[in-house]
Length: 490
Ligand SMILES: [Zn+2]
Ligand SMILES: [Zn+2]
Image 1 (cartoon, rainbow, N blue to C red):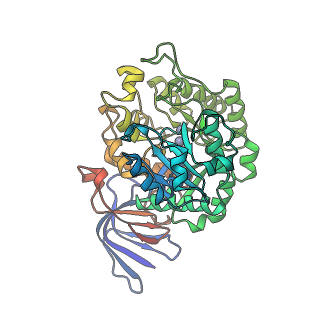
Image 2 (tube, protein in one colour):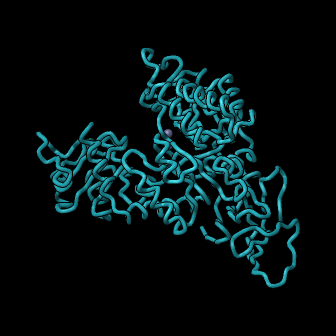
Image 3 (tube, rainbow, N blue to C red):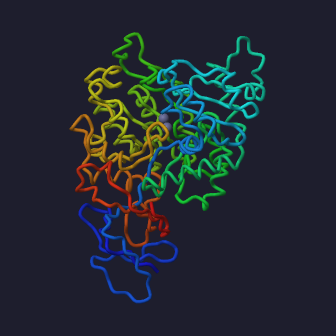
């Protein structure tokens, strides 16, 4: 038994409730909570040095594999000359026998160009190298990679590839990673998540080029990771999801695209492209069949919806299945960026949940931001409506969409309390809820974690400063993280 004391433990069960000490058994389960620290014989006393302790943070939307893999690869974001880039590459450690570099932007490079195949061959004559542009839509490869991917016969090939050839490279790279590299990427992701105060993260499996092999690998190795992964098989084949024993299906499976590329589906045209309203990727019929079947089989469904037309399309389906056969499966609208009051009332009535990213507001909702350009001011005021959703008793949860934004719950909590549209701001307490209690409810784990109380796992995030009193939540330092009663120093 361990007695954690000398800290303020916020239960997050109800506002204002806190403890001075908690007793945790050898299985990592909280046995007792105390309003004043007790004198107990035969227990290990762990002094938390005046920390402010919250339930472990949970990020409800990540692409952890990419996040982890990128952290093992070469980040070219700060490369500003070609020489600088060559130096960074020369230090690279290959993953599964390949060198992968990303975030390349020729506009940031003094010479304003991509490196050539010949230049890359000089650094890596025998190891395949892939250098990916920041948007992922093009890449440069060396001769060895061209040989292995069978692209050698391309006419005028100088190393630079776009379109279908770029896709072929990504495909080859992901399909030729060893199990060791894949696990290593997830292990790396888990470490980064832990460092930023998370004790569980919802992670999308089967992004673009990976496949359900990852699902089985993570399941088999779950006990090796310091945190818990909550898995989303990103498929639309209900039988496969049932086969692998998943309680849910989907994730960032796309109802539409993104505002940046004018592919988010809108009910009215884009402000800066009046002939376009974006794209609904699949038919109403496709979604209704898929969602009906998943619902029948008691699978929780999650779908990526950005624009109001995409949200409406999926909402129609969720509504229909709920009307015919109401269940508490907590089907999820992921992102849920552009909504009206009427839509939110329907979301509430149909008992639908949301996985949202408060940092999107910080990134794109500013005066000269992407939202205003694409949507105009009125629609911008209806983006990322955290308070409107919270106040309608819709299950609201917070996430990062890592690698799109950094995995950092404190940044998310900070953003949620300082939304551009003041009426959509959450209080700090509510913002913590969406990364703890609510996030646990989303995956039906509320009996295991999400609050600090007797019978739950001791998943705790210990901070040097109190979120509820802080003037700059995003800068609060994490002292330590405890997962299943296991203590990690940050
Ligand atoms: Zn995503
Ligand atoms: Zn998405």
